Image 1: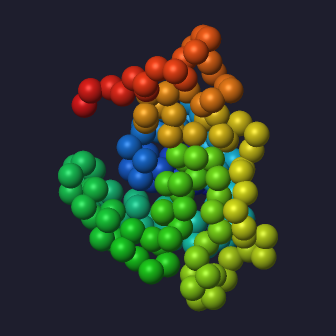
Image 2: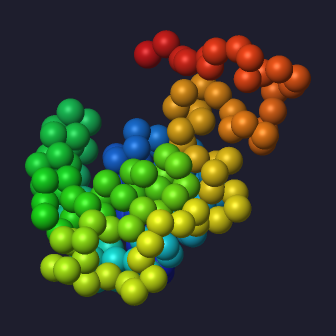
Length: 159
């Protein structure tokens, strides 16, 4: 496995834990490479590597047990002053396809790219956002199920 493939696998595992979608579903969006590249460009390769490494350590320490892993992610990653804002941006990125500028206090402390601003990552990011399957709907104007589908309430799966 190359370093690039290892980084992508780590990124997908982290993203899966943050979003609740499987790595398979995340790959299916076609956005994984674009999202990894965007996050790496905006916060730096060192910060992204630290985030993926922190997740791998957390996952190993919990044995991958879901409830413990979720709790430890909240404390170790989301509660971390450097990693937390990046992880929260990744959640938003996967769900709505938009990179939101890092908070000003984070940028002052940790740097980041000069080009860090709010933007839609790719033309497909909106339609492939996890928001749509999460609410049981299709994006308006894309992936229609037929005439008038937006007149009906979303089909939310029973959990």
